[in-house]
Length: 422
Image 1: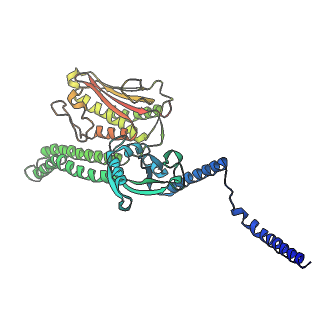
Image 2: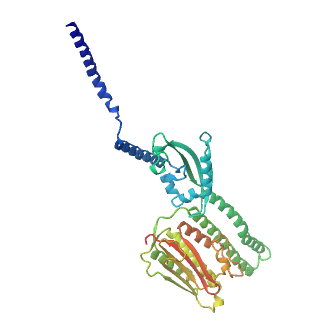
Image 3: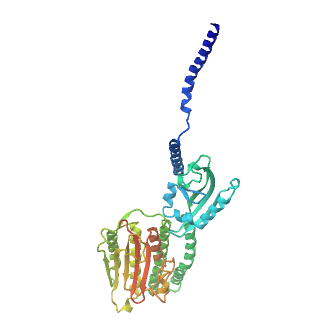
């Protein structure tokens, strides 16, 4: 009986202990993870991949600067929204630039404990002229932070991937401002010296020998007025060109109807043609539905510059053409295929005149700032800024510009612009 009592007591203690342990077991059961089968393991892995990819994108999206992330194969893993906004059409050119690739190579070649941030200056010529400073820093992170296409270890937590983080800063405006300041000083010292010398000479004459001669005073004052207006035109052209260059890498977003643009051109030109032997016409048939994305004031300025050039040089040559009226025609058509223009849908605006024409040796340099056709080829000279302004505005609009000319027959200036809708 005593033995049975001891056994009963032992069983009771064991049973009581198990019962007492049940609450603890259930309390900890939510932390117990049984060995997953293949399907569960795949689900967990996919979940971690999606979460990690979103996390990296979200981190990059929070950065106020333009940033990129490249893996050790130099492929861009993440491009921040700010980088896409600032460098919409230039990111590929930046990544492929030799200076960019050289910094990435140098950084990846460094040992982990010796890795130091590097920086470089990237100068782009296409699709737009831009100057970008880039800072590079290398960091090794767990493989799961990357999307599957950029992983080396299959997404395991134990594997790690080396990333290169790049911060981009656009220095185009600052560099162009400094360059424009230098150009302006050089231009002012060269171009403004002649009219200023003339003005000073006339003033000295009027103050001295011609002080009491009204005929000479009237003649000299007329010349002084022309010289002052010449300086004003030069300065106005420089200031306008400077403003256009500052905006070159900011694409305009307004929708411009070509029919409305040509109507405004006709209204603006009518004042210039008053009393002049000019036959001006606008051919706008079939352009009612054509639209481009742009800045209407700047595109109008482009057409006005071309028409004013045709007037200035064409009328100066009028005596050599038996006093026939100068013909100027502005037209617009859809860009033909296989005509040397970009393959994207576009339109071609043309300004054609029957003026003296331009020798072929000058055509490739007409859009250079301050370049002017020699007096032997033209009886008048401009400031050398009109076509430079045209080129800068069209670069901002992702357009193209071409000049065709035959001496003695006339000149045709053609503008290609991408259509907003085909």
